Length: 394
RNA sequence: GGCCGGAUGGUGAAGUGGCUUAACACAGCGGUUUGCAAAACCGUGAUUCGUGGGUUCAAAUCCCACUCCGGCCUCCA
Image (cartoon, protein in one colour):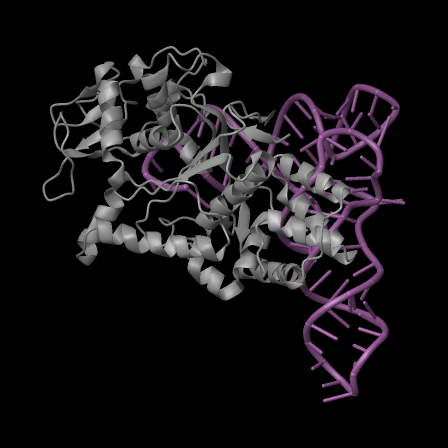
């Protein structure tokens, strides 16, 4: 009985999968232009808890979790030029660091980890579908845009801006999007960008180029999960424009399938909040980030997991060295309990209580507290069982 | 400017109507242990939940106003 906050309705909702034997979740992954920072760690630790809980509830082989790599984008290309290598090499290096971090943090490997560069036929096909339906249009420059005026009416009741609580007219007024005279409406977004000289590009019926950011996720989720999924997740900042546009793309392609609110693109949209530093968002552009691998080396993976799980996933977590040090001690205590010989089966009452906490919108802070209480009471079997569900590994 | 979210002890943070004079953790303080120290373990902390009103038998929890802070509107987990 999992209750999760659905960004689309802004309410905690009882989660019921479309098919309990194949529960599906797509979470936006990283753009490997740089090594991952602590913020990436948070998102995927949180998702890991959700994945573990779903596996516990529906069975280990009944959950399909997809997390992609956006391995081609402006910044990767820019970086490759800067250091004199290929975009592929930049992406591969950073993906390797990312995967090592995920491994260190004991984050379960997703069922599928698609990349843009290996999903090109699906991406091109998706753009073609939107062109065929006249929802997208090409420009003289060779770009392809989504025509927001053509967003089909959908049985699911979606209107553009619903996911991010924005009104289209506000978006256009406040728009700082690069002016492009070839666009029909200011809010139209790129599905495909025409090739620039000397840049990596792919051939398509409408000309060479590379995909826009949003279409990639629509295509990769279609290829791995299908046109409808249970949970779609990502960082808070992806709500707009990325997820809003992704949703518009899927409705453009599959509106006839999406007959009502229960049968839309995703049943539930899941977003986690950021890591902040002195109250301000940790980000690459502000330069106030800490590399994930450095933090793991300095404090240990268990301390980082403990620190992150102390706060509810929808609230910001403020980073400081002191905060990580403060988490190291209880994390160590937990680790020591996990290193003890297996203490047998947990008490049913404890399991039930523990699961009800996680099922209540992933209340990991409360679950961690229950673990500490069990630890003080020397309930080793309970501690070992609970810690495992929270992804701690001896 | 528009929209969204938040404000709980020295610190992080859970709690969204009575089970809470507020979980859990860190720091501090007291103690046990120890040759001393460290580590470990035990004990100890807000009569109070941004401010002002209101609703209720009952509010940190609901409603209204205000103040402050953050996020999104542009690449971003």
